[in-house]
Image (cartoon, rainbow, N blue to C red; front, side):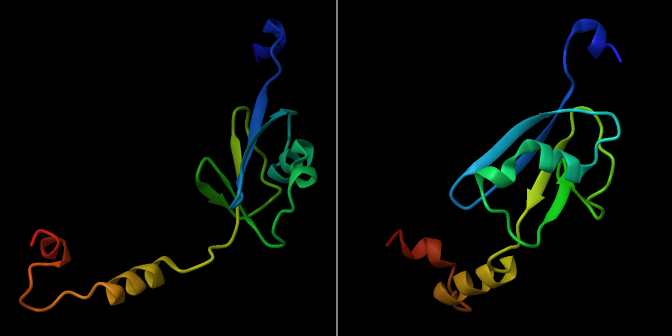
Amino acid sequence: MAFAEEGIQPKVWVAYAAPEQQFHLDVDYVDGMTAQDAILKSGIENLITLPEQYSLGIFGTKIKDKNQVIQVGDRVEIYRALTINPKDIRRNRAAANPVGNYCRGNRFKQLK
């Protein structure tokens, strides 16, 4: 590639969003680097405790194998498990704000 000629070190990024803080760390790319290698090389495990079970993705596309080879410029994303099912969130919201059969909806009650 032209990176060596220009003196630019190719990079990849590791991203993780904890409930209290977000991380977006750059890592120097090495040919044949895997997603797991990028995570280890980023040192994110020294900054925060990662969950025991997590999923990985590259630019929002989930990957099944942590040993998948990544490309220059990729962003490896670490996904933690959901704390609540999105369907349950909607059910709880609907139960708290019921709409009657002949009512126009809750937003019109605020106009009275």
